[in-house]
Length: 315
Length: 243
Ligand SMILES: Nc1ncnc2c1ncn2[C@@H]1O[C@H](COP(=O)(O)OP(=O)(O)OP(=O)(O)O)[C@@H](O)[C@H]1O
Ligand SMILES: [Mg+2]
Image 1 (cartoon, chains in turn brown, green):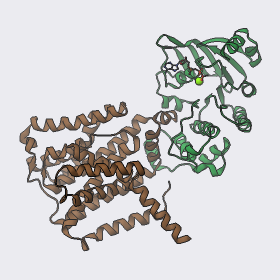
Image 2 (cartoon, protein in one colour; image 1 turned 180 degrees about the vertical axis):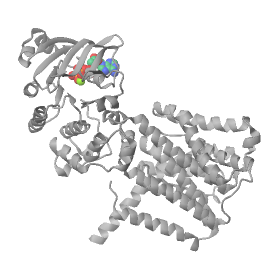
Image 3 (cartoon, protein in one colour; image 1 turned 90 degrees about the vertical axis):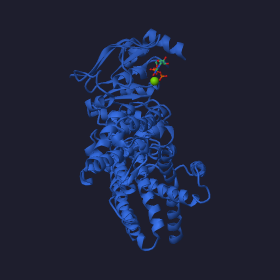
Image 4 (cartoon, chains in turn purple, green; image 1 turned 90 degrees about the horizontal axis):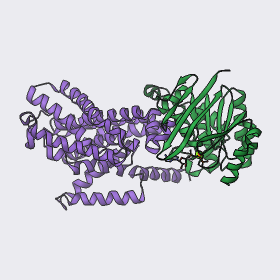
């Protein structure tokens, strides 16, 4: 559980490796990596709440959408600088999430998932009817300010953001707070029976999750430069996030990251072979297979690999 | 000595079933009270109401003179009462040490983040209930029932209660383990801990309590010293009827 030197060595290696990558790979690969970075941010956000506490959120596109729409509208319609609009977007995401989803934290299991799913759909309907002059209605928005030019810069920005979030969440989850949140996922009653207010803990997990989703959503929209509601509030997008977290291994931070990269590149390589939505079947099948044979996810396979390497060295 | 726990006119109904029937009893500070009764008598239900996991239909529960019925379970634990569960409910994917860690945590998110776990206290608690150092890293799936009960006991002690409610702590334990837990309870009694103990193992229970009450179908049928209660006609009838 504790912090070990090799944890920091691994993070250090990962950071250096990722920052050197633009020297060796093509711009096309970098663009794919950018998407992987954002997916990793969303998957970490989902994991902090759902992977830990077992409250499965189907509403993360809702949170990401609030972050993305807020900064898009502020910058494009009101000429607010991004230095202000992004923090405001994050704050909005947290508030909106708190207002609508917190009551849902009192219900358990599939109902929680359903309620959160309903919010995603609701927001999709709302952006079309409420002030379409601001939201762009069904068509969405384009010509949103971008923060970087060129693949390499976009890659550096998204990598920095993703790694900052990943390392800080990893450190946070290494504390007793992480233990308490995991305990909720295992037996919420026993956590209360140990004297901890689970509502407060869940609210904290939720706010943290919403903060990351808002941050990711805001930066993502300023990378894309456009916003399409049907792509954002989409069940496939939702499942991509969840499968990335599950596939990589929940409650680990590094797991959702691995899962996100795996999924993004898999989808990318499948694109020429399976151009349509059939691709989603393929990764559904892969997720299912992995889940049956290694429910702890890819991260567990990597860990075992390391272990056997170690054994080989000492033997 | 002042009253630690005072239960007055407690009533709990499950539909037509009266699980607690106008029950009143009190526990002085440092006292140990046995709560006996046949299967389904309503012993666990009384615990759940004291802890706020079940809400009584009527009656009051006072802890050190304060009515606690409106408090949440974590608030009651902070007020100084804690229980073990008849069916142990460990955190399945956490080691023995981490299970105890959850009990030791302050109910304060900031403190959880900034101050590290007290691993020395975790070890102390684990050893005091009879675990070995090597057990600290073991997972609940590797533990026998006896170990799970010990873990339940340690996690409850970790919340630093002044009043402990023990629900069948001896069930599934070996004679050696029973002796160990009994010694632990005795030494805590010496230090002034207040106990309410439910046990079907009457020979093990007898030396641990100052007084006993017997209930049947939620109703108190006898009260007094252990032998007074055991010699009570109603108690004998209920136990014979129950077996
Ligand atoms: N949540 C519940 N809903 C309905 N009935 C319940 C509930 N909990 C307990 N009961 C019933 O209340 C009665 C008392 O149960 P309780 O578990 O308190 O008995 P007990 O004395 O602890 O028994 P045991 O010695 O078997 O542990 C039983 O008839 C039980 O079936
Ligand atoms: Mg019981």
